[in-house]
Length: 284
Image 1 (tube, one colour):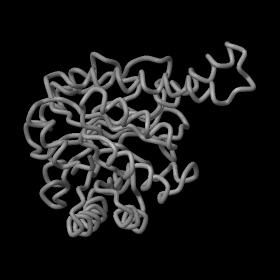
Image 2 (cartoon, rainbow, N blue to C red; image 1 turned 90 degrees about the vertical axis):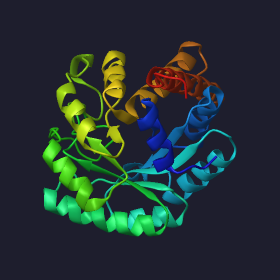
Image 3 (cartoon, rainbow, N blue to C red; image 1 turned 180 degrees about the horizontal axis):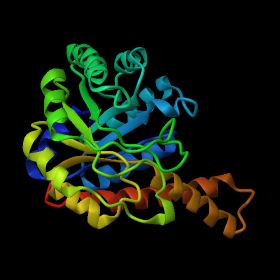
C-alpha cells in the first residue's frame, strides 16, 4: 500500500523502532524487498537512487515501485534517494514518487538551506515528503551507492536545529560516523552516540542514518534506541546478490542464469529479513 513516508517515519519515531530503506536496482530487487516487508508485516521505504539511473531509468523505477507498493497491504513509501538535481527531483514527483531526498550536504550551510527549501516548497505543494541531510556522510570505497567518495563531516546540533527551522524538511539524515560503501578491514565504525542523543533530543523530525551496511548489529540497535527512525542499506544487498551468484557457480550452473537469479534473490531476501527483525525493536 503506497503510504506517506512522513506517516511511516512519524510512527517509527513515536514507537521507537527503525524502518529499512533499501535501494532497488531492478524489478527483482524491488520485488524481493516488498515480499519480505509483506511477509513480516513491516513498513518499508522502497528507494531508488539518482546515482543508479544508468542501471534503470527513473520512469522504470517509478513503474516498478508504484506497482509493487500497490500489490501489498503493508505500508510502502516510494522514495528518491540522494537526489541532487532539482529538475530530476521534480520529474520523480511527477512520476509518482511520494518521498524525495535532496542531498545538498556537500555545499555550505546557506546553500544547503536554499536548495533544500526550494525542494521542500515544491514537494509539499504536491503532497510529497522531503528528506534532507546536514553534515555529510562520506564514502570508504568507490561503490554504486554514491557518485564520489569523501570524508564524513559530523552533524552539529546547532546547525541541524537551524536547518529544520529554516527548511521545514520532514526528516533529516545526520552524520554520526557511518560511511557509504564497504568499511576498511571489515571493521564496524565507531559512532558518536552522544551526538545522536543530543540531536534526537533537539530535532523534532525523524532522524535518518545513511551507510547502514557494515555498521554492525549492536551499533544499529543503539542507533534505533538513540532516536534513528530510518536506516539506509545498499551495499550489503549487492554483496548478497553476488554471494547468490557465486553459489550458483559453485553448483556448476554457469549456463543457467535463472539459477543465478534465484539464488541472488534468496540471499537479498535474507539480508532484508535480518535488518527488519534487527531494527524493529518493539511490536509494530
